[in-house]
Image (cartoon, rainbow over all chains, first blue to last red; front, side):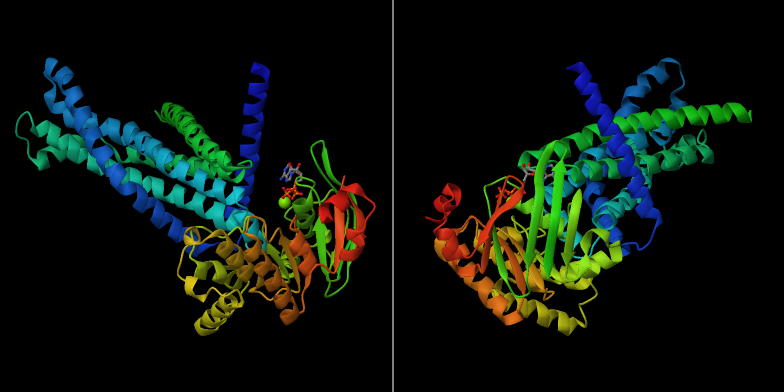
Length: 257
Length: 239
Ligand SMILES: Nc1ncnc2c1ncn2[C@@H]1O[C@H](COP(=O)(O)OP(=O)(O)OP(=O)(O)O)[C@@H](O)[C@H]1O
Ligand SMILES: [Mg+2]
């Protein structure tokens, strides 16, 4: 039983790896479906923007409220904006945004392609002179990969607003002072690993969503299963990628200094 | 026109098609019947390479389908219409966009006016002009079938593969669809392969009937011949 299960996971992973190879092939080799890609990017941004705005705002607010007492105990209250900004920009912003996108976009792609697969729409495209790997898959993967860093940037900005309001609940601080405090401990090169990470998160969400939809079995319940496992696998992938990028970043820093 | 020799298709350990041999001359309506799950859809999907056959020859319009590169395959697919068992209408697109899709994707759209004209003509063929701006989810089952048919015909294919065109429809609508198939065939002089369980559809459309069983085409003949068959399965199907 356990053996069978690990076999399944293994074959799923090799399937995913092969699929990723095919996707990369179509990302490199023309023709490209630029119009469809723009449409998908627009949809992805448009669909998640409100959700991300709300969560990022609350995140910034709550994180600040929760961290404050500790810093007050140490008499280090002025460090609050800086601490929050570092944790948001480096870690929480990208990861939370990616998880929300995995839930919203990954499942959407899984369900959409899954139902297209089950109802033979993908086959119909193929006989209409359209390569579905290019038209459906490559476009979505490009869209998620490009949109995620943008969404992360947006989420970071909104959570700063939440954090600013939380700081202000306990005494006046001007927006200018807040921003100075927030940006002082941040370096430009904090943004680089965070952005690289976000690209990979976006790529993983797109590829996994498409893979799960594309390989959905038969019947309507296959669609639900595709959507569900797209979210689960993408979420795990996000944490794994996060860990790898952080490890890589630390070992590179160690080499430099 | 269409020639299959020793066609074999196996999924893992499930040998669905063992040794299928079939030859269909131009202009003929060939009907394929057979039990559910026997491999009828697999057979016609192999013909357009939606599934890769494991062995055998498929020749359509003089081209050896299994040997074609993507570009040539797409050129051939343009000449083959495929009506899917579940219509396969794109649910995210309106009826108009569904019909435009094959034209646009095959660079056959022409000017905006040409495109509009072709879409309307296709809709008129199936008598559903008024649905042009509806979404597939707003259509009834029979309407979906007909829009699917219109989309299949819009490229004016030389060969049409119909996968259960009348299944799930009431007897009257189903007869209408069968008659539509015949009238369109006479209008455009197409060759057709029709998969069906529907005896009235067989009666209306078939020039020749082939029975798929145990991975081979195990009997062929005209409607009257089939009706008097000694084989119990065939006899039961037709009587
Ligand atoms: N992509 C696939 N992968 C694995 N097995 C498949 C696949 N497609 C079809 N099969 C199997 O091939 C067999 C024949 O399926 P097919 O869809 O051709 O049946 P059918 O004759 O069209 O039946 P129906 O009349 O119900 O449509 C079935 O056992 C099915 O499980
Ligand atoms: Mg079938």
